[in-house]
View 1: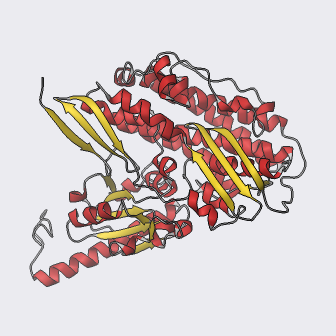
View 2 (view 1 turned 90 degrees about the vertical axis):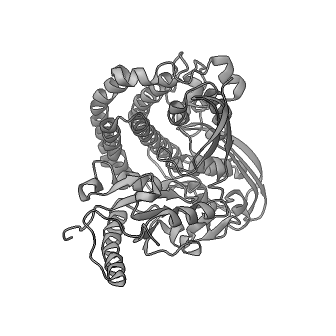
View 3 (view 1 turned 60 degrees about the horizontal axis):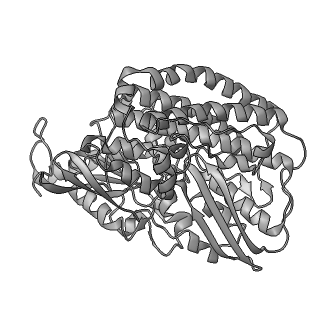
Length: 359
Length: 158
C-alpha cells in the first residue's frame, strides 16, 4: 500500500472564490478521503431576526448570498406572506418569477465561466462572463443594482417594469439566446472540454438520492426533481419541466446547467407574454403569528425556508437550508478515488455556494 | 490616469463576505471592465501580490487567515477593503460572529464602499492603491538610501 499523506486544500485557493477547507487524504496521487471543514463565512444571520423586524430582515435575507440574492429574498418574503395570510398581487408574482429566472441565467453563466477557468480554458471563461453582463445590465436597468438588487418586500415587490422595459428584456433574451449558440457548441462539442469532463466524478442515480443531492446535481443523475413544479410565485401558470441528463458525470452536470439557461429564457418570455396588470404590492398591517415551511428552487437546487413568528415584530426563528449544504455529502463521496488534479474541478461541478451554506 | 509605474498583482480573499462583492471583483477581470489592460492580474499567491483586496467583515475563523496572508505579502503592500462590510461591518455589524471592518485585524489603506461595490468603484480603488504603492515604495527607497535594482524586489529582507 502506498504511503498515506494529507494535503490541505484551501481556505485561500486560486480556484475558489470563497474559502472552504478540505483535508485530502492521499495515497500517492489518488484521493482516498476528504474531510471538509466549513465555517469560514459564518456570520450568524439567522440569529439576526431577533434584532431586525420582519420587514427589515428582507434585506438581510437577500445578503445571505450575493449570487442567489433574489431567491433568498423571495423565499423569505413568501414564507412570511403565508404566515400572515397575505395574497400577493399576480403581477408581483410574475415580476418575482422574471427576476428569479434572470438570476438563474446569471448564476449558471457565472458557474460556466468558473468551470472553464478551472479547466484552464481562459477564453471560454471570458466569453461566459461577457454574456452574463447583458443580464446584469437588465438588473441595473430594472432595479438599479447589479448583483444585490433588493426588489422583494413582504407583500409584493418594490419596483415595477413598464411594457417598454418588458419588451427590452424579451429582446435581450432573444439576443442572448443567439449569442449562446457558440458557447453551447463549445461546452458540449469541444474535444478539450469533453476529455476533461466526461467520466469525471460519476454520481449514479441511486447514490444521488441516497446522499441527498439536489438541483442540477441530482437532475444530471437522471432524477426528475425540480421544486419549481410545486408552483410557487408564478410557476404554476408556466410550463416547467425538469431538465435532466443520465450520465451523472461532470459533463452531464454542465449539460443540465446549459439547458436550464435555455429553459429560463423560455420561461422569461412566457412570463412576459402572460404578465397581468394591476398593483405590485399590497399594504402589510400587523405582525405575523404562526409558522410556515416552504421550498423554492434556487439556481443550485432546492432551498428550504422555515419561519416561526410569535405575534411581535421580531420573528422567533428563521431557518434556511441551502442547496450546497445538501450537495456537500455527495461531493465528498465523489472525491474518493479521484486524482488530486481533478479535485478543484469536481468541487466546482457541485457549484458550491459557501456563503449560503454557512450564513 | 497617468502612466502606471508597475503592474500591480492582486490577491483576493473573501473574509466572510456574501459573495456579491467577490463576483464584482472577478467581474473587473472580465471583458466588460478588463483591468488586465492596466497590467492587473488576480494572483492566488500572497508572496507575489502587491495589493490585498479583502471583502466582507472579518469573523473569528477568517481573522487568522487574513493576518497570515497580510504577513506573507512582501513590502510595499496596500490593503484594499472592498464593500461596506469590509469597511465597517455593514448590515452584518450586529451579528455575533462579525468583528466589524477589516481594520479591526490589519491596517487598511483604501476603503471602497458599496453593497455590492460596483466594478467602477473597485477599479477606482485599485488605481488609488497603485498610486499609494508608488508612494510607499519611495518611502522605503528613501529609508534604505539606495537605488532600486532593475527587476529587484523590495522587502525580501525585513
